[in-house]
Figure 1 (cartoon, rainbow, N blue to C red):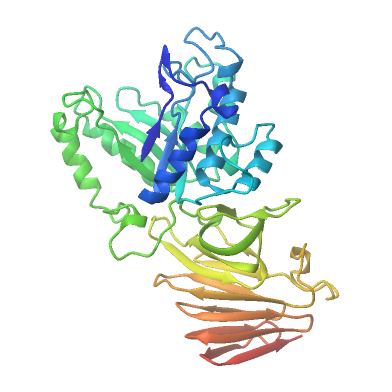
Figure 2 (cartoon, rainbow, N blue to C red):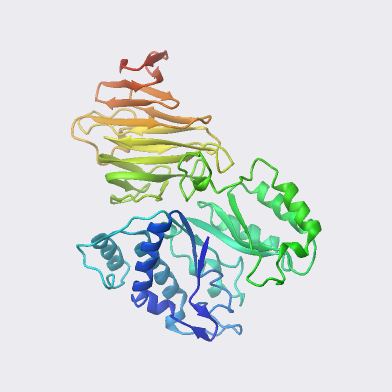
Length: 441
């Protein structure tokens, strides 16, 4: 995890207002290039933004505003600009989004240029309650919008264990995985604090990452070797299967997990993309290009007619309870129950069809038929299930196509075994490679 600040209090290198205006673009462009070279990166920019000890906080300790260039509005714009540039992609597209936000274009790049699309995940980590603790300095005042945040989190220390504010904060931001960007023992060897924090994390399944902060001083107050009893408690708790030896994207021999985890029943996450894949959020008005690592809320519509996308979905509470498949050729919407191990892929129906099941989902349907190809490559319980108007199909570790027409749904198996359920007859048919089944009204 890489944490980025703008300097120390009274020694500020750049203000949020200057970042928003593009005066830090050269740094952001270099950061984009370095992440491309390094690989998957968790990025925590301007953490504890509502703490007066940080130069980018909008308020001093006495509650006095630090001025327009440090306002919460400028912080949000600085964050949005940073995310758009570091994530990368077409500079023309980035500039278009910046204009929509009322911000100037990327400095030092032409609209004809393209930045590397990098595997980066942004961690938004305020204090659970502002300091000063006033409404204008609350976490929500600094919220840049769900499109620009991958993880929501906070910092938590044994010296200030405020579980009441922690609980409130957890409930305020329900659609994101939760990270403790920093946690540590402080001035007391307290296994009780360790056990209580881990117990709290266990009861709150969106907590997916805890980062212990040993500080940057060899004999600082957070160094674990100072706390032998608490260290023993940590080692014991880490034996649980919930805690993995590696972050999944770096685990030896593991699948290429996304750096931003999907949330069961809430969202999927995009992995590798070829060509152009478009996405429209639930109740959204327009389609926008999907980028690798992008979060796709359940109920979003994806258009893969001109490309393919690897989608990851959660089928359990552990980070490694993740399935993935590659989708191409058609338009579909995904849905999943909060505890379901199945992710439904609902095919959009052609516009010429007179009503029918799932027709309401097809807001921008294909001309006369819709074919979605799905290739699954995981070995975990659960999976994707394609659903057309007249049949559904599910399998594990295989490759099949579902073709939706007005009067039929056809399943074609390329590889492996697929179970097809005919929605009219209620029968389930097993198809092997090369097999085809056409279900009618």
